[in-house]
Length: 456
Ligand code: PMP
Image (cartoon, rainbow, N blue to C red; front, side):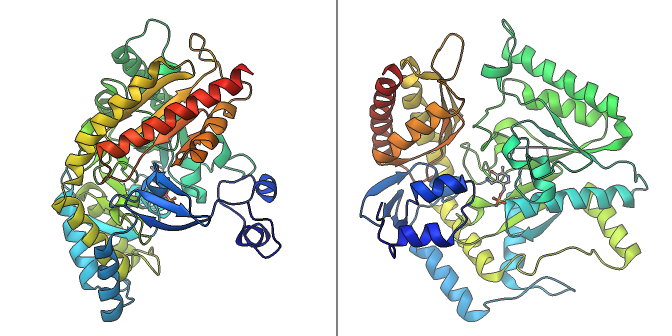
């Protein structure tokens, strides 16, 4: 790190409070400053190149140097740089993108609504559901069930839905009306001898118990990521979504699919809902919608949600919700071009094929002394590190081995992210087999280096 008083590193420490960072430790450790990107690679300010094996934050589907997105932004910027959708106003990118998303949806959807981040979209989902319950004359139906280790964002409502301690401790969260049920992590949570199907059955039974204990008439919706991302890449066990959805149907509880990570190809189908047979009433999407070149997120809602909402807005006089930059024309134009690229280049097919290869290569590491579990589907995966494979015990403090290995991997030219002791891999959808091999080779080296330190 450049420690000169006016180096970018020193100025970063002086002026920035970093997201998801230990602010005290940052004063010592300083930043990794990324200057540019090309394909699946990024380069720091010393000229060192890395494979961005997280696609930024699970988001840059088309890679870091897509000129067509730059051109789409420039063109829209010079034609109409800003407009909105309040009070009956509209614009072409908003109309085109809404139509495109409704047509792409794997289940019948009625309307799109645009927001700027995954968190805002999930807040909006919660507000729509409360509004709908009031419209239906069921003001008591306000509870939303989420899952431990689920990730839905960081605003007051969406951080309440998130089931991770760091998003709630000392923030005085969660708010009322949010409940959490068990995480479907078979490897960690299953009882000895329990099959995946039996584990899924048990989780569905636990969900039903929770609903009955709360009173089914008070539960409005269930929210889940088809595959959990930031909670450590948790792939649902066999039968899970089928059994969970049967319980939701029985009590007329809506399903929100948080497709913020899974959406647009990540799991090898266009949506994670297709991979796992979800039939959501609301779909929430962001990240790969625009490859995160510009911030944009969207909700798709079906008529079960739209119709009562429309009635309620008519009764009150307006649907009193919306963001200044929601459906921003430049972001929407970039999203449309990004979706065209994903389709033209069959990046979903690439996620399926190169994804299967990445899963196979990662599973070859299962025999490594430090690897407890390899899990994933398509181009999203995690390896969970343990000090003792039999007991699944961590090395010292939980997360220490993950942080150590993640640091070594970064030195070896691959950016991953450790969520506790799980190292995640979620590269751009354009990745090739040869580039997967580069990741695996750096990962092997890093695991061996970590093992040496563990043994010392
Ligand atoms: N939902 C999921 C599944 C996510 O992964 C994320 C972000 N990692 C969010 C919601 C929140 O999105 P944002 O950071 O854009 O608010």
